[in-house]
Image (tube, rainbow, N blue to C red; front, top):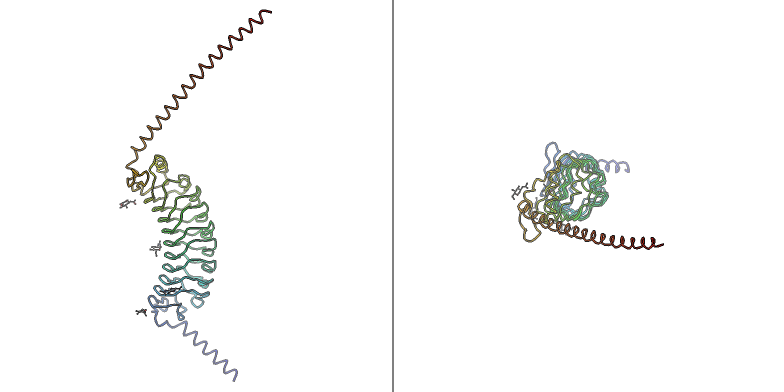
Length: 356
Ligand SMILES: *[C@@H]1O[C@H](CO)[C@@H](O)[C@H](O)[C@H]1NC(C)=O
Ligand SMILES: *[C@@H]1O[C@H](CO)[C@@H](O)[C@H](O)[C@H]1NC(C)=O
Ligand SMILES: *[C@@H]1O[C@H](CO)[C@@H](O)[C@H](O)[C@H]1NC(C)=O
Ligand SMILES: *[C@@H]1O[C@H](CO)[C@@H](O)[C@H](O)[C@H]1NC(C)=O
């Protein structure tokens, strides 16, 4: 009797498993020998239970899924593409994706994720592309991407990131594209990009950057494009740009509130003379300060402004030189007078001596 019950249990479990691994969830479409499971726009509020084990692409975009529980995909280890964009995900529990050792692309954009714990990236060593745009991230810490050794493209655009820990990207020596546009960054600390030696594209457009440390771009020896358009820079951080050590890097600087003083002109002239740096939108840069130059192109105000300044500098220099010369002449005269006086007294003393 006991044995029969046991057999029955085993049989039902086996049939259940085969059911869950080979059949398609009602609201999904399974195609191509069950390699593709398409469950988009199907009103799922949690991950579907019946995804064929053979599935390599699972599309769950446009649903209402809120949580990714730990070990969610233990029956779908063949997944290579997992699309979860446009859901309601706020929580990825530790190890949520840890079973997906062959996963290449994970799309989590347009969700409500505000933190990435260490367990988030566990097991994703082969992941090449991670889409996290349009979430609610405010800071990246040293463990956010700890296990993503193979990542090549990381899209973090349109979050609210204001802080990046110096070790946030330290595991990602294969990364080629880093998209951080439309966040809340104000400064770039030296060291935050220090391990990104394969990085080709660094997009920082649409932040609030108005400060950067000298060596911040130095480790980026493969960088071909640096986009800094739409930030809060009023002056050029010459040493930071000078630190770029590639053969050729294109830099975009439009839509910053440039303070078009002569210093800026001078620094831009120096920057443009560096062979390996291309300022692609230089002719589009416009002034914000001083108020009289607001809206003018930097190249339009070029000469007038700095001739005026040169003249001022010249006048000041001449004044200083004249004053100095005058002072020297006066000093010389005074010295001569004193010398004469001394001479006389010396002579007087001598004559006193000669009296003896
Ligand atoms: C999802 O829910 C909406 C509203 O409740 C409904 O109109 C729509 O038909 C549902 N879609 C599917 C695929 O069930
Ligand atoms: C999204 O999740 C939140 C709770 O995390 C819930 O209040 C809200 O109704 C959900 N929205 C949708 C569209 O499912
Ligand atoms: C980053 O994500 C945004 C929003 O989903 C998308 O429009 C953009 O094309 C993505 N960029 C890259 C390079 O993947
Ligand atoms: C400069 O601005 C014009 C007009 O706004 C635009 O068409 C062009 O693409 C810009 N050039 C660069 C290099 O961004």
